Amino acid sequence: MDNEKLKRELFRPSKAAKQERRGKFISFSALALIVVAVSAIILFVTMKGLAAFTQNHVNVIDFFTGRDWNPSVKGANGQPEAGALPMITGSFLVTIFSALLATPFAIGTAIFMIEISPKRGAKILQPVTELLVGIPSVVYGFIGLMVVVPTVRTLFGGSGFGILSGTLVLFVMILPTVTSMTADALRSVPRYYREASLALGATQWQTIWRVILRAATPGILTAIVFGMARSFGEALAVQMVIGNAALMPTSLVSPSSTLTSVLTTGMGNTVMGSLQNNVLWSLALVLLLMSLLFNLIIRLIGKKGAMK
Amino acid sequence: MTEKILTTHDLHLYYGNKEALKGINLDFNRLGITALIGPSGCGKSTYLRTLNRMNDLIPDVTITGEVKFQGRDLYAPQADTVEIRKEIGMVFQQPNPFPFSIYENVVYGLRIAGVRDKSVLDEAVEKSLRQAAVWDEVRDHLHESALALSGGQQQRVCIARVLAVSPDIILLDEPTSALDPVSTSQIEATLLNLRHDYTIIIVTHNLQQASRISDRTAFFMDGELVEVGNTKEMFLNPEKKKTEDYLSGRFG
Image 1 (cartoon, rainbow over the protein chains, first blue to last red):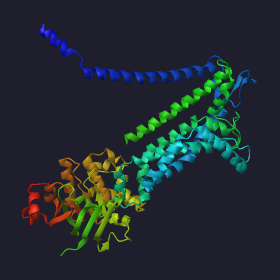
Image 2 (spheres, rainbow over the protein chains, first blue to last red):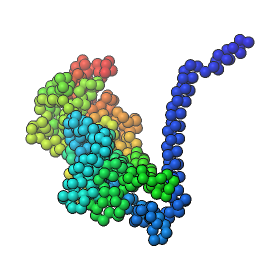
Image 3 (tube, rainbow over the protein chains, first blue to last red):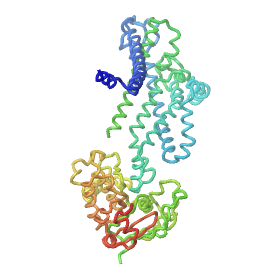
Image 4 (cartoon, chains in turn orange, red):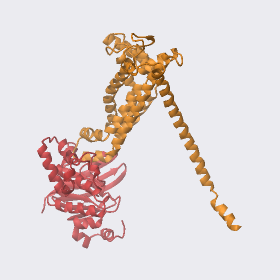
């Protein structure tokens, strides 16, 4: 009888064990909720995005290579005009150009912040960069519309709306993100690399150029790809300055469009379930896949950096 | 009398207001190994780092007094730290090869000095790695990452990296304290081979190491130089009471 009682006492979970189980349950439910939400979004966008091809019989190849975007009109071949190539091109052009433009500035600023003047960098530049990250994109877009577009119009002709204005606005938008991530990458280069290099008679520039930038390359690449992902996904600011004409860009100042700008301008004007609506979902699917791809690249770079 | 290659006179160093070195007078002869010993925080590493101006990297450091290398004042306003560090190399406590290949690690000092000739670089790599007694272990992996080596091999590659720029003096800051006994004895053997061609100054916590490899020993305590002399004489017959107490393990 006593033994039975003792056994019960011993095998009863302690208070700490109960708390532990409760804590695990709460954090696991939070995780599960997020996983469900993300998978639901991916599943939903995929289903809707494929509907244009399965229900409305839009040719996949025509979608990716077609140059005419006017889904409510049927083209010469009896198919709706749903060629997304102009938007895909526009998206890639603004992304690549803004990253190309931002990278040297970001690396230069980060080097100044971390290596050359750490004190001023920490006091002035760091808060400024963080502030710039926090400015809403509509503000950037508004400045772009009021300042960048007229300037481009005066300097390069055309209407001022186009890839160039989009690139410039995105450049300013992603610069702080890329800069602060590059600065993090430089900061994480161990101090002893600097010491070893200086002790071998290297100048500060030689040390930065030959050791620190090389050791930080994976981190810097991650920063650039992260900036590109932001460029690619940015909608509002780009939409305000790119001109929103679903045309193949013929020059840097010809009005054009990106995947995001067509989505934001088009989504309010279509009826759920119609072809016009479905092809917009297809554009969203392309966007989603591209962001997944950018994420994958970031992870791959991170892995490669950790391996060496 | 042998030539003095490096002399320090009344050297004081302050971290902010704290006096870490309290007037050190110490000279080093050309060639041979000098060991700097003493309890933790006695200033021996700090002293070592003043000899190639590595303390410049630490903010709030004030240095007074005189450090002369072959008659030139290292702390003169026109002194060039880059040139100084080419002639006075340093090996650190933690093996710190760059995240490059072994080959690129060794030729780093030459590349920054502007050497481009591949045959010169190849020759320097083999010679330095042989001198550092690590050539046989790495000769087939020269283009693989130096980070894949063991700690002891990494440290010898770091020594080879310093040797490649052929400095006059090599400073070593507890080079074996992060290594196992086998690697330690390999490094010691390496240093014993190098003492005929280089002036070596080594900071060590390990008294046996100092007695095994050094020709002269300097004992530091509380930022002061207590005693300096021939290693054998000092270990057998220390002049000062403090030295005797430290060597016999009564403190420190």
